[in-house]
Amino acid sequence: MPDMDQNLACRQALASAFQALSDEAVRAGWPEGDVALALAELAEERVIEMTAKVIMEGSMHPQIVAAGHRRS
Image 1 (spheres, rainbow, N blue to C red):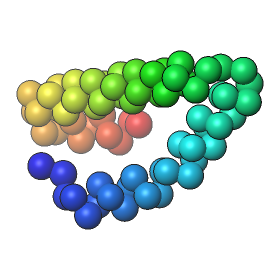
Image 2 (cartoon, one colour):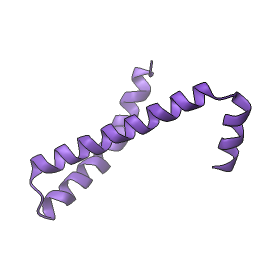
Image 3 (cartoon, rainbow, N blue to C red):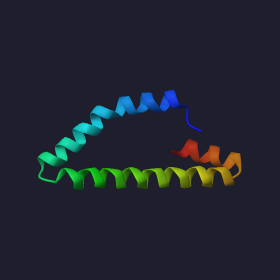
């Protein structure tokens, strides 16, 4: 389970950049609701990618995982 304080600190660190990205998309002419939905969908895709990575790494031998990290 994620550390709640760490999660809050991360959210606070990202909040201004997230708002700036949203504002930029709205200024470019996208409706605010479309922007919010697109950002939510992108975030969901990222969570799915990270979840898959954790599952794959958890099912792999630790030495293989470590070798993969060295290549990244």
